[in-house]
Image (cartoon, rainbow, N blue to C red; front, side, top):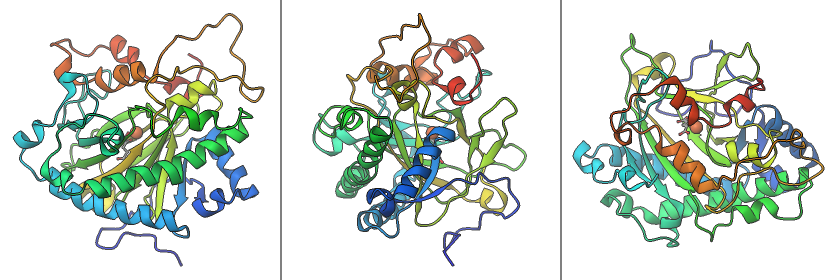
Amino acid sequence: MELENFPGLPPFPGNMLVMDLDRLSLAKLLDHDDEECRRFYLACEKIGFFYLDMRSQKDGQSILSYADKLFRVSEQLFSLKVEEKGKYDFSEKNSFFGYKPLGSYVIDSRGNTDREEFYDVSRDDLLGHAHALPQPEVVNEELEVFKSFASSTHSVIVTPLLDLLNEHLQLPPSTLANLHRIDRPSGDMVRLTRCPPQPVEDKAARLGEHTDFGSITVLFNRLGGLQVLVPGTDAQWKWIKPIPGHCIVNLGDTLVKFTNGLLRSNIHRVVASPGEQAECIRYSLGYFSRPDHNAVLKRLDSPAIPALPAGIVEEDFTTRDWLVRRALSRRVNLRNGVSSSALDYAKHSGTEKISRRVKA
Ligand SMILES: O=C(O)CCC(=O)C(=O)O
Ligand SMILES: [Fe+2]
């Protein structure tokens, strides 16, 4: 029987409303197994989330071991003093990398703020393609692990999945991969997060409902807390149970834009961990892939991609504009005292309406 719990952590309770996501095998997808590919395409269109079983593929196993190491780095990194971590908050320089303190992000139209800290490391910095931002010593000491995690996740998971989607979408060869080249400047990043336990009587969302801004997110969770909103008007929140040896993959807004809504970037959020897990500090780790900064986020031309409604002209948004709008506009420190109103919160939203299949 496969291991369903993470050693040393309380189990995910058995009586929760969980999302029964597909468990796809990385090895089979890399082998272009017909049935696995069919399930992959359906998952990308119907829910935009699935588990990827990494255990039977050599590079997948390496990524799992880099992820283990980065969970340990997270513990050290977030245990630094707030003032020390604050030195790496670069939001006022219009950078979306570096440290994001607890509660510095507006997560809903009422102006509530988040309950988790992030540390985002730029892939371009790691690979030496950009003038690297300063990093705390604990990150500098493990740069090789960050680098291996970022480059393997990009080459073993992100690019092959984009190539499969490319084929499914009947696009000219490598169209999607060429929009996500590792040697072009992009907002790709490794994100470490930490959520402190929350008082039982106060379980507001830790990270509000959102869609991911980019293309493919590869997420490593050990404790519950992540939930997805099932599509439709009478949607329900369902838990995503972390499974050892698997990462959780989800699609983001740019793939919705490239495919005019054919692929789904599903709404999700992070809440207090369930049952006994609520007592633990929750760490999570993700690789967020995005198209290169200059890519224009518009429908790609293919007979397999739904046409735009007559008369609709898409805005000319580059990935960079999109990331600045989505990642920085809700930062409390950049709002110059302007409070959050439903109107301006909505202005900075992503593809949520499309994701719910609800008419605007
Ligand atoms: O921590 C998680 O499980 C998910 C985090 C997330 O959705 C995000 O950082 O975009
Ligand atoms: Fe997310």
